[in-house]
Amino acid sequence: MRPVLITLLGVLAAGPSLTGAGGGIGAGMARAEPNAPARGGDTRSDTPDDTHGGSDGSDGGPQVGYAEDLGSIAAQITATRAHLDDLSHKMSVAAEQYNAERIRLAEAERAAATAAQQLRTADVAVRHASDRHRGLVTSAYRSGGLEQLSILLTGDPRTALDRAGAVDALSRRQRAAESDLRLARHDQTEAKQAADETRAGRQRLVDSLAERRRGLEESAGEQGRLLDGLIARQAELERQAREREAAALRARKAAEAAAAAETARQAALERDRLTREAGLVTTAGNAFAAAPALPAAPPPTGGSGGAARAVQEARAQLGKPYVWGAEGPDSFDCSGLTQWVWGKAGVSIPHYTGDQWTAGRRVTRDELIPGDLVFFGADLYHVGIYIGNGQMIHAPRTGEVVRIENVWWSSFQGGVRPGA
Image (cartoon, rainbow, N blue to C red):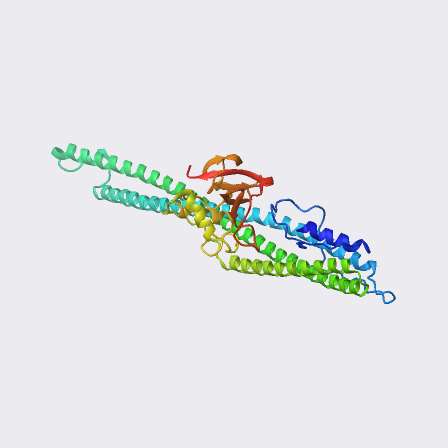
């Protein structure tokens, strides 16, 4: 709908030779494939342009300043929208990196638990070896030492050889116990080193995950500010278009008045839509901030029904909000949604686009059937579930809800058939 805005503002800027325009203003409705980075710098300002023209008291006609202001506001909206789309793409990438680190943290938790158990086992082995060695040393001491000559020269000569054999056996056992103790202590040292390394690795992941959370929360704040700026600009666009409409009506320029009225109407619709989006962004940000940064849970299992069930489950989630890291049942991110629906269908897949990309048989565009996963971008920043006729169900991004949309063919990376 963005071209309609440009058309309307072009008509308004043209002056007397105006024609009516239909359609919607949509200054920011173009959402399909939000993966192209914004061009140029950030030209947004925090407040709308306050400079605007008024009606000419001498002839009742609108001044050229009106059209200039409308065009300036439209340019600001376009620049801010591009910046917001670029930010949304970066946030999608960051969200999937966050999901990947949650999976790695779960693996690190398991490795740390295994290493801790091995260290406990090694500690027990050292205690047992030490106790055995200490007992043998005590026995040797009580038997008067292990000097063969002393044994032969003392006591009853008839039993000297027996005593020597017993002492020799004790000596061998003591040497074996010393060897066992050395090995147990070596194993204990290695186990402790492994436990320390796994704990340190886990802590690095915890710190990295916390840093990614902070980054996402800061991006959400920036997203909210950009949306607030767009809302203010749409309100200013609506106000100036209404003034333009009134001036054109006074000048009896019906076509120009109609075009201005349509611009104002579409600006109001877009302002309302942006307000709803900003509300969803706030809700998603609050939900994300309230959720602890936990290791990824094991993928759900126990469902059945295959692809048909997956599509059915996807349709049942329509309208639920996007939240980073969410995997149902009340909210989702893109890979959380696909994990959820295929779990219900009996196929367990990880909550991360990079792992889902290898969770089944790769299929081309021509081979897609309902239920297949469709991936986007060379960095696999987004995934949806194909439902046929060139459409998919997906959780697009923060501020939006699970919905049906045409597949983003221009950034389509490939398809995957889970379980195949």
